[in-house]
Length: 141
Length: 277
Picture (tube, rainbow over the protein chains, first blue to last red):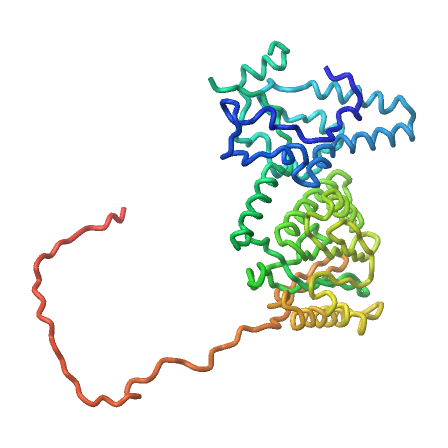
């Protein structure tokens, strides 16, 4: 259960993959992920990568602070509570959830952006192993 | 024993996974002397002008891929909403996708508000999207339309800045087109005069810029009516061949004639039926 605020959820770096290679058998999969170097792992590969990763979070932060300035502290607190509730409406851990309630709260249910067109998670070629995902979610792993 | 992994659900949108691989490949290719393929751009002349009753948008129709013409008759005036159209210069795919996304968003917005969409709304949506991607989406646009507040014309740059002006030009041929505008633009022109002015501006871009060429497309938007004229003018016609390499029989005199018949024997004759079912 994530009890921390928005700021601590911001990602300010890309995950270091050198310590945990993605290939099977635990070694670097050169065919799929290319050659490695420490510099490659630590720095983002594209100037937009970090800003895109944090975009939704930053937008929420901005909206909440505007709301707080206009309507007082209770408004963003109530909304954040609703966000937290909506975020818990999910399918099983290894299935893709539509997040419709969260989208409606954010107001992005009637906008189309690149996140709807490109890289549709429902069409991703890899899937997490169901048993492992459930155990991870329940904290048994 | 293979390791099993738990993955976080991927988000949609742009994936930067291959950026490092691409930069490695590019540097390796450059060492050997090979260059990676370039994106198709519309080295372009696009322009727009506000006249008495509305807007005239104009564009050429050439799309280039480096030094080669990729498309001799591409359409650069994109539909945004029934009363708003947008010309696009820059990377062809970027202008195409951006205008389609904004068109969809504007339609949803109009359904949600129940009103005809305004040009200022489209402008704001475009500039917010382009600024979010910090200029990496190479789309320079001329947005024009007529809404409840009258005719509006905006120019939008790839980094997200916009200008609201009575006449705008964009693209590699923009300087040539702007020269024509600066000379002959007047406020409150009639429709025919405005169409002629835009046609001349695009023609200036076509003849003086390598990245622009072929035909001139016009789009005239007035309150309640849109006239998409494609092509308005074929400025660059492909030449007709005047000479021919075929000669008439008898051009060369026949001096002597020798006929050698080939004796062929018919060995075997088979019939194979076609499956025409």
